[in-house]
Picture 1 (cartoon, rainbow, N blue to C red):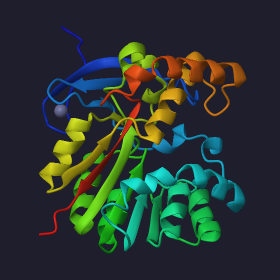
Picture 2: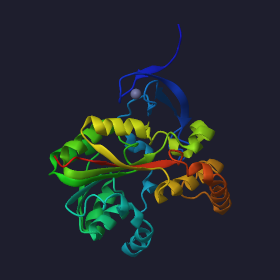
Picture 3: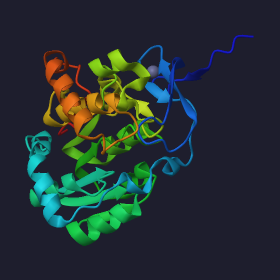
Length: 298
Ligand SMILES: [Zn+2]
């Protein structure tokens, strides 16, 4: 009997097969190895096993809660994120899924949006309410919280969709909840990245098992289009994606030390990123991409 591990693609329903296996190389929360399957049709990559409680793989230090002044300093470097929102929408209700400690929520609030964060970490929820003064909903079922809330002019997910259990349901609910003319902003690791081609399962953005999905931009675009959303922007060389290029090379050089790689790997990672920059800056080759999907006005 052939022992080929197969499953069904949660996006398009075609057969998927084992692509690679990876332990938690970034944070070493467990000794197990996780099977990632790849869809034969749409190239979606996903953890084959449905892990009901993913919280076990998020160590206590996953979220560091900065002071307001530290947040302001960081937010100063992150203003580019609003460039993916403001050309299309300038106000209204902005829902961020998985804001963490809320640097984007802060930028959006300061730009005049009424911000709601839907967040699975309760300490982050307290921080969002107490330090930022924005609404925070504590849940690990974001699609439900989004569906039960009022309509929104913006739904944003910065490096979140790859973590959730049902990403395509989240896209469907976001499309349903958006007001006409509203936008869904999604940034996520890019399985078309140069780094993934070269490093395979050792690419730090595999981040097993926290990254449950590596979603090709094309599959995400199809999913959004199936719910009436039109892609109006796609960039794998925006400032965020460029930062993830360097992160990828740094942590490939020193696995197991996320956030604390040390000066030498950090310098070496920056040098490698500089050397391969002509390749990684090509369309579709950066470590991540940011996409904007718009709901038509009528
Ligand atoms: Zn598929």
